[in-house]
Image (tube, rainbow, N blue to C red; front, side):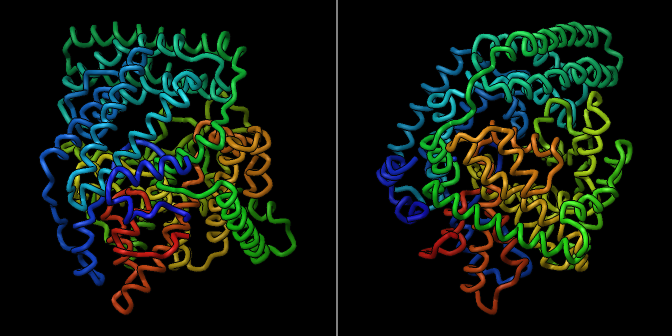
Length: 608
């Protein structure tokens, strides 16, 4: 059995216990599904406009559990509550002390016991699906903070939290500026405690993670000192007392971040000798809890290696079409010569979005349910943890602030000229087209636009990587197959290189964490098989040290292609590409084995 039999999972908690014992996932954030709604969609949709989502009737006990689960989650992670649109948490900052983690572990164990009792009851089909998702979320978090205790091994979350929590209040206009400024002040007052917790909790971390934490901390100093102070001048609207309170709280926060940066560089970095590897058992359990993937690691590697070979061979063939006399890496570098400068990087990204959106609409790739556009900006310093581009969207429960941000990571000011050039080459025009497809149309941004149509609270507030990142990565290849780029081999080459990067992530994540690979060894894989510049290859490899299951891009893409094939066969003449995409996105970011049961009830086919 490659994946858990989802129809059996729906029968109750005992099956989940069997799966948990069999072999032993990706993250919290925000999205969703409905089996009942899916049944209506499958009956009514043969392409064209989707019917309105069906709102299922939920039992009072299960609904109370869901409410309690998310209330307790936001109590532990108030900045996440803000991001999802629950603004009663806006003045709180995370407590990352040892006592807080111990309390969270006890809460999760209590929730797990309560959920298993509920799953013995006669739940509706929707509730059974949601119960599987929530059980995976709880098990995954327990594995992370009680089992692997990553909060003792990784300083990155501590130094990245202040910037992200405060920026969430600044960048979206969900309340008047003075009110949000008061919230910012309260969170700034909590920054020293967060950084003190890092000193108390983190010991012997991997050097790679401390180096990255130092970069984030250094960037956060400028963000707090300059960006927050500049924003506050306008937000105060002439209130001198409010501005005085901000200045006092911000000064203390900046000093705390400066002290943390000094501590990371001069005290923690010299004694950072820990291992980032989580081991085979934890790796398999993460995949099971977070993605419902129950596949032996050797079989996972076989699939990844086969796909890497396929994409690598296609890359070589496409490079020969562009220039049969040049080596493939030289062909790629010739494309990269046409890259934006530091000054034109953001405008270039902004300009191409409309053309991509227009193609998706004209080719009937997917129904785009809104005229809202993403705002293109530089990635904030606190979020520059190995990411070249990302999409930051408001939560499904955000009723006022509609701003979605397409972030592009610029070169760092202190990089060498050579490092800056290598970084900017990654934003050559064909590559940026593919990146923008992934992040915006029809990738993450379109998924966000559908989030309000997800019928249950659970599925508006959770997602899994194989679905969400798998969809965005699938979109890159699918758009080229549907004619984006008009057959230009340069666009195809860019799409294949992005695929090769994801294929290398697939291999690197498993081998870094289960086969003793070092980050430099993984970096060589990215250089040799994905043709990345050395600096970018190292960034990609180092990400694998703290994001072990970043195979979810390629694995998800492969699952979606197989699901599309099976869905097309089931629909017959009623099938259309837009129909499949619309139905898929409307379900939200559920694990793909569950998605198969939603779109193809009773399906017995293999997911890969």
